[in-house]
Image (cartoon, rainbow, N blue to C red; front, side, top):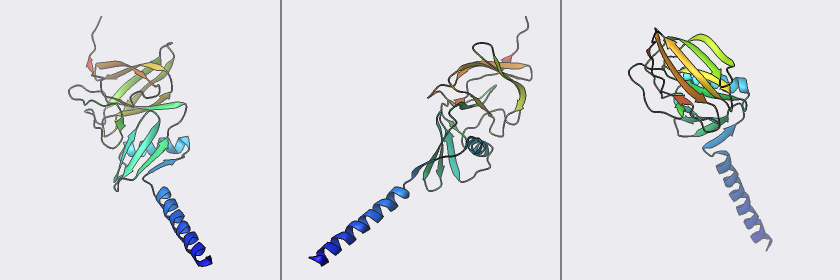
Amino acid sequence: MKRKLFVITGLVAVALVAYLFAVNGKTNTQTETKTEDIKQLVHDYSVGKKENENASITSQELVVTDKDANESTYSLPEDEFFVSIAPYVENTHPCAVHSLTGCQGEMVNEEFSVYIEDTEGNVILDQTTQSQSNGFVDLWLPRDKTYRVTFTHDGKTAQSEVSTFENDNTCITTMQLNENKSA
């Protein structure tokens, strides 16, 4: 009887260890990271500093998939929303969830004047910036608001409304630059 109890206890222990190994080795892990670190991680993927992994960014999290298809997720800041904008003249692509490692915009390493104000007229951003090698300009904006965004480049302007609510798009590829019209 003692032997039978010992064998059953051993089998339960083995099963428990196997279960714990499977749970700890699962392919989708949630990782807690400081706001500064998550922003740097997003930037590193966006500019191509991280290789052999795919990364996309939703309104709530950064999702990284390694070469073995293991997926890790990182929560984004509660008060900031990531959006990446690719102004274009000729070519664009449809997109909603930005792939930091896959989306490619038309206007690579170009200088833009970027002006953003909220619906109350408060200026959020008014500066000159350069698109990255993927043709996108990455921005962190306050969450749960709607903004009027204007990009100007080489005498051409694109305007759009962008919102930062849960489940809003993180990839904006609809801002076509057109000739400025004089009054």
